[in-house]
Image 1 (cartoon, rainbow, N blue to C red):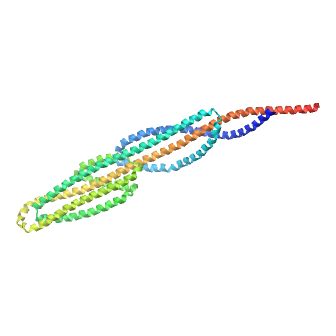
Image 2: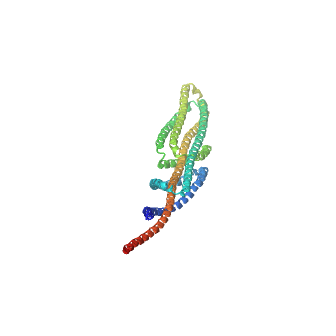
Length: 459
């Protein structure tokens, strides 16, 4: 009986285990669901491998960026932005998955309790060692991710260096142009001196007419200042697409103006070369704010250059005014030379025509400089749009990888549960054996009771 009592006690223990097994059966059903997730994880691993392929394609994209100069391609990317906004709206779905990870963390805490049970099974020790190996691999993956992030930072710095080099080259080009303008100004001053010798009385009349022309130009300068002020206002609104569209339309008008100046074709070709270089630059989100600061500085430089040019024009006008005053004083003396002036009138008229052309060229140069600034802004905006789109795609992939990691962790938890289930199955089999023994004890007890009844009868 003592043996049977011990068996009965063991049966009570086994009954508690049986109840526990019913709970484990529900977990087994949950594991079948998790197996489908494991299959889904294999699919996600193939997607991760695709990301490595996509990285090589991204490198190819840096080569192909020079082809993105056409505005029609940029319009298609603007349309892609609307599509990407819809994908950004899908982020709350990913947030719900992140909330699922918090639930999985609570399950992981439950698993720490179950680990104590797993330690009872020496068979599971090898599997635990495998989990430690997998953890080391996960840690290695985190290290590789940090290296990848560092590489992206280095690439952004290299891209910034290329941008700065292109700007330095552009500045050297602008300096050479400014030096050319100073040479042209000296030649213009020589021409004005020669004109003063050729013309004395009629030159003053042409200067009066020129002053009226200069007034119109001064009015045009005030209009240009108002435009510069508008550009400073628009700097705060660079991120809005409506402003960029207006600038694109303005660029089409300005391109028609550039085509009207056949003299500047060589400079326009040089500008197309600079456009391709500007389009090759890649700028990251973290550097966009820095770029806006640099744009404001560039705009200050363009404003200062226009002011310097304006001051040089005003200096030439002041010099002309001093020459005119000396000429007015000489008019009383030079009355005898009026007959000689009739011969020189044809030359004076030719010089006035040349002056008007030179002045027109200076106006065109200021417009070309304004166009180069606007083109660089538009190109920079198109580059930033493509990068923003690429960054949103990369963020979605990173979020997907974080979700996949959480699923991998969940899978490791589920594997430990499966191991626990196999242990529980062996216990269930042991319980069935114990039940058969309990049934034998019940039969033996009934026989003993029958024996006691028979003994009482015999007595």
